[in-house]
Image (tube, rainbow over all chains, first blue to last red; front, side, top):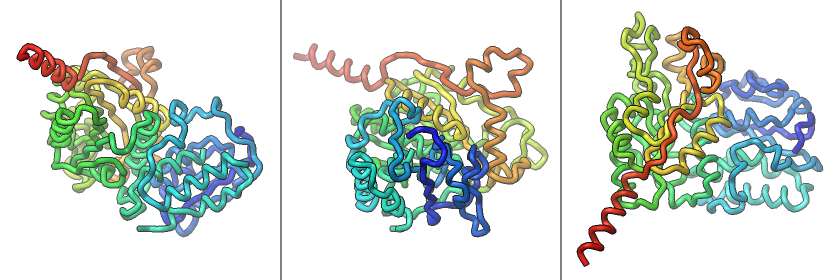
Length: 131
Length: 277
C-alpha cells in the first residue's frame, strides 16, 4: 500500500492494550490518543500514513494497520519491514492455536483474492478471546 | 503493515493468558515480536526452533512463544542450551536472557559459551536493573544511576556486554534497541542465520523499576532517552573521542566465520569412526 493518507484502517484490540502510550506519543500523524479508560483510541484515522511504527513497537501486539476497502496493496519493494527477506507468508509453519490461524488465514485469503473483503472481520478477531 | 501483528499472533500460545505479564510499555514485548519476525524471515519450522530462557522478566518470553521452549534455572540458560545443541545439532537454539541472568548469575557460562563458540544465538535483554525482584542494581546499571540498593548512586563501573563478548571470542556480536525495531529485526535475522556463538544485546527500558528511580516518569520518556543516547556505530566511530562517552553505539560489532563447536565435534566423530574401520 502506498504511504498515502487515509488509505488505511487502524484497529486497536482493547483487551490486549495496556495503555503504555508509545503509539500515541510517537505516531507521526497523531492518529491515536490514550483515552480516560487507559486504552489507546483511534481519533484521526485519516491522518495515518501507514508507516507501521505503532504495529512494530506495540509491546502487546494490540494494534493492526490494515488497508481499507479498495485501497491498492502495498508494494513488496516499499516494504522495508522485517518480513522483506521472508518466504511467502503461506509457507509459514501452521499455527497450532485454532483461533488465530483461522482468522489470519482468512484475512490473507481475503487480501490476496480480491481485496474487496472487509478487513474489519479479520480485525475483530482473537485478542478479544482469552483462553 | 497488517501482516506484522497477524504474523506474531500466529506464533503465540493462545492457551496462555494474554495480555502478557510484562509491564505496560516494556521493551521485552517489542523484542519478542522481533524474535518472531526474525525466525519467520529465516523460514524455520516451529518444531526446529528451541527457545531457552532463564529467570527474570525475560524468562516469560519463552512461555508465550509457540516453539520448543525450556524455562530453566537462574543464569543457567546457556548451559541447558549447550546440552540441547550438542545432542541435536540440527535444532536452531535461541537463548533469551536478562542482564542479571546472563552477566551476574550466569556470567561464567556466558564467557565460556563464547569461548567454546557453541552454535546458538544468545539474546541479552539489557534493562540495566533486576526488574522482577524489586529493582536492585545489576552489573549493567550505569555508574551514578539510582536503584533500590544504590539510593545515592551506583559506584561501580558497569559491564560493556559487547566488549566482553568480543574478548571472549564470540562469532557475532551486535547491539540493538527496542526503540529501533526494524534495525533489531535486521540484526536478529543476521544472527540467526550464522554459525557459531552469536550474541545480540538489546536495550529495553524498564520504567517500572529503573525509570522511577532515575526521573523517567513513563515509558515514553524512556524510549525518548534511548533514542537520544544511542547512535549507529558508523556515525559513532566518526565522532571525536571526547564526545563518544555521551552516546552508545548500536549496530554489528564483530563478525567472524569460525565453525561452531558442534560442527567440529561432528568432524572429529567422523574422523574417529573412519580410523576405527
